Amino acid sequence: MFKFKAIGVSEGLAHAKALVIREADLTVVKDTITDVAAEQQRVLDSVEKAKKQIELLRDEAEKNIGAAEAEIFDAHLLMLDDPDFVEGMTNIIADEKVCAEYACFVNCENFQAMFRAMDDEYMQARAADIGDISQRVLKNLKGIADNAIDTITEPCILIANDLTPSDTAKIGTKPVVGFITRIGGRTSHSAIMARSMGIPAVAGAGDKAASIEDGADLLLDGTTGEVIADPDDETINQFAQKKKTEDERKATLAMFKEREGATSDGRRIVIEGNIGKPEDAVHVAELGGEGVGLFRSEFLFMDRNDLPSEEEQYAAYKQACEAMAGKPVIIRTLDIGGDKDVPALGLEKEQNPFLGYRAIRICLNQTDLFLTQLRALLRAAQHGDLRIMFPMISSIEEIRNAKHVLRQAKDLLAAENIPFNPNVKVGIMVEIPVAAICADMLAKEVDFFSIGTNDLIQYSCAVDRINEKISYLYRPLHPGVLRLIEMTAKAANENGIEVGVCGEMAGTPGMAPVLCGLGVTNLSMSASSMLAAKADLAAHSYGECKELAGRLVAATNATEAEQIFAEWRG
Image 1: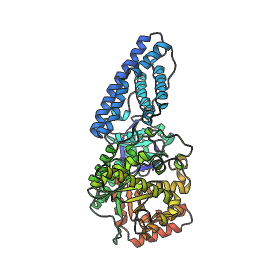
Image 2: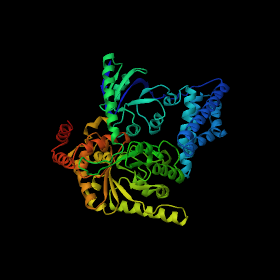
Image 3: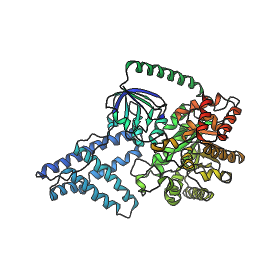
Image 4: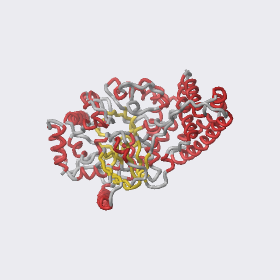
């Protein structure tokens, strides 16, 4: 029996066999060959195999996600049918007498360089498509199986270095009961999506996860971060009892589905859900969510090599609004940069990406991109209570400039006689410390605030929130962080606007009463955390919440605050 502890990022218990996802070795060696025809045939066979793989992916994407999402695979098929692309490889083999793998690698480099040199931005983005296609052909040449997640048929716990958003989305359609990643933390995207889907997960396991053999019997606790490999019978029985207790707790929480969020003496706190794709809104509604407090629209742009059109975005936003049946749906405009990449934009790598060209800064610089999204949002706002939220705001100028582009979008739609809702509420993310400090001025410009605690903590404490080596410095209960939240809430309350928290702090067990006591009016979190938050609030009066918050804010350091909170939680 082998056990270790990492970071519990998505609560729940899981027991299944391990499935280790290993990084594919795509190293290419320039081997010389004598049988040119045989090597050229290997290329042709690998290309044909790649076509069949992509056709299956296209059909699956069209069925599970939608026709628009599947179009990228049609583009890949067209490239594989391009004689120039295929002959590029066979000609290299004939001219240089090299192996198929090396010819595939050189051909990819040549085509990518050609596309990147073009003036047209759309054509430049096709370089990423060439990379994807070439990698698929190379895997076939080397006999490497396609994504192991696609082949899962039995319950398992995945172990991987990390999981991309698309990997995590695939998990939702497979019998994956949990996962462990070697890197990342509570705010990594795989963790956020795991919580949205209610899948237990542990992150930041590092080298400890390397000791787990493929097929090993695993016990996973996504709340505590504990992992046990090859447990003995006594440990398995204890875990089963723990699982039974957990299931009973969930059954008790179910009574809060139809209740509004409120303290025991009636102080209203709106409990909403965070989502990454429109289908997630259904889950929020089913679990009694009072709205969507954060729709991360960037997930529509990630893990693809083209940009979603206005029509595709409109359909996604409309779908979320209809799922919530009139309840608020707050959609954050494109928040990329930092640890979130959109290949189609071809953004340069930066030394300090979290402090660089990202979020609203990109949108105000690339107004065509911004206008497309705002037009889609305004059109979708006819179908529900859609609200627009601008991320990473640091000044009044940014708010006014963003609202100016929004007015342009309205004018364009009106001129084209396209129906839209002109009366959409506009809010901002408060996640940069200067925004919290100037909240009294910013509140006069918008209809609501939403505090993004993930970045607010990161920037306030000067700690990279996805670096497991310094995760101990990421302290949500740091008195300085709590004072920034209190300051923001005070400014919102005095100006008569709603103030929510949509960061992971909102869904942390026991934290809802703290945020209520600080003056927050709305809490948005992973759907799986909503019922527990309602239960936490219902167990305490508003006076008790304020008293607790006051003690935490007055603490001399984070350790003292954490001790106060732990004692209060019992």
